[in-house]
Length: 381
Image: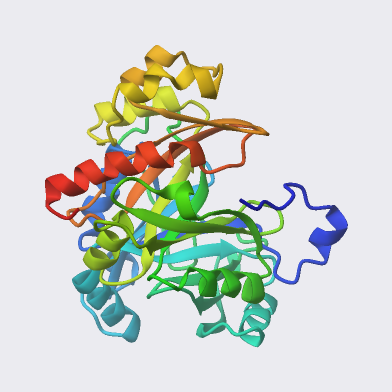
C-alpha cells in the first residue's frame, strides 16, 4: 500500500496548478425531486435551503438544494424537457435510475481551472459562463469524468445568494434534528469498468493535479467470493478525495459488477459523510427509517484486540453495527447504508475520524461480506 504525505506546505499549495476550495455540491438526477428532497430532509436530517422550478422561471426542471454543514446535495428532475440538458437528465434517469450526475467543485478561478483541465486532456462539457443576480456573479464551467458524470467548476467569490442565480431561498420541509447528523462530504467513490481504474487515476493526476493518497489491491479487498481494486486521488489540501474502484476477478459477481450492471455503466457508487457523533447520527437516521448494513456479532468478539480503545464502547458499536479501523495516525468509525433507491446502486457512508485519514481497510472484508449477503438476497451474487 502506498501513501503520500498528509500535509502540503503552503508554498506547494500556492503553486497548485488546479487549486480546489472543496466540494461545491453533489448533484443528483432523480425521477421525482420533490419526493427525494423530502426523503433527505426527514431520513438524513438535511435542510432545504433553495429551490428552482416553474414557480420562479425554470420551465424545464425542478431542483431542490439541501444542506447539512458544508455538505450540499442538489436533487433535479425534469418537468418538461426542452433543451439538451433536460433531455440528458430524462435519459439519464431512464437508463441509470436515480444517481449522481455532477460532483461540483468550488474553485478560486473557474476559467483558469477549465483551461488547465482541457489543456491537459479533459473533455469540456461547458465552456466558462457567468450567472448573475442581485446577490452577485458566479462563474461556471464543466468537464467530463467517468461515465456520464461531470465536474462542474464553480467560482462563487463574493456571491451571497442561497445557491446559484436562478434559485430562490426556501424554508425547510421539516424541522431538522436538534443535532446535525453530519457536517461535510468526506469523500465520493466512483466505480469504473474492469481495467480502467488506472486510466482514471491518471486522469485526475494529469488533468486536475490530484495526487495518489492510498491504494488497495490484491488481497486488501477480497472475500471468498469477490474482490475489487481501489485507488484514492485527492487534491493538495485533502478537502476533496475521490476513491476509484474497479472489479477484480473473483468466483462470483462482485458488488462493483452488480453496480455497473444495474447502473448501466460507470458512476458514483457512494458518498461518505463526515460526522462528529456517529452514534447519535445512526440512532437518529435509523429511527427515521434509514437502513444500514448488518455486521455479524463475530466481528465485535475480537474487535478490541486489534482496534484498541475508541471513544465508543464495543457494546454500543455492536448494537449499532458500527465498524472500526485503526492505522498509524489514529482510528475511524464508519457504517454504510443499504442502497437508497430501488436499484442496487448508490449508497452512503457515515464516517467519524479520530486522526486516521484512511478508508477502513481493516473493515473491507467484513463490509464486503455484508454487501454479499444483501446481493444474495437480491439474487445478484
